[in-house]
Image (cartoon, one colour):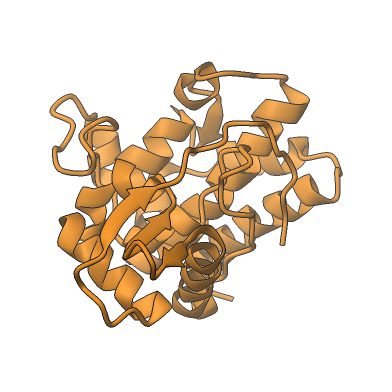
Length: 229
């Protein structure tokens, strides 16, 4: 097993312990005791970074929400994720590392000018919009939690995209309207703008009509923890 696979396996093992309601403290310590040098040298590709940090994000949201009883918007901002002797927030992971330090409220169009050198060093080179169908924020409208592995990442992200969009999108041929998840609006820049959103929906849902009106579902923030597939 390569070192990168070892680190990624550790992230998946943590998520599995969370799912099984088993103690995670020793695994959290192992992750905290990694060196930044090892983290950077072993997670060298975007695919490795995505696999590791998606598993870490999904595991730690559950840990913070259930074990630490952290609630509300604070859960995304608190720097309680200890990886390689560094403290990260869930926002650091999602918007900093996985979204290449995009400003959270810019719809995916603007980089955060205040991002740290560490986040820049750890971030992916290219944003893969499919991560939005893999990250779970504990709400009813969030995608479910899956376990991601490096060797099957592309297939798994495709499956997550197709499954989520198929379940969250409705087509009304009478009104020529397509209604889908609000995630596609909030992060439209990641998808290549509205044209990119339409291209994705057309591909996934096999829509041939490009003149439809695009609308978005209200996002339910009702808590829905431990939503594993």
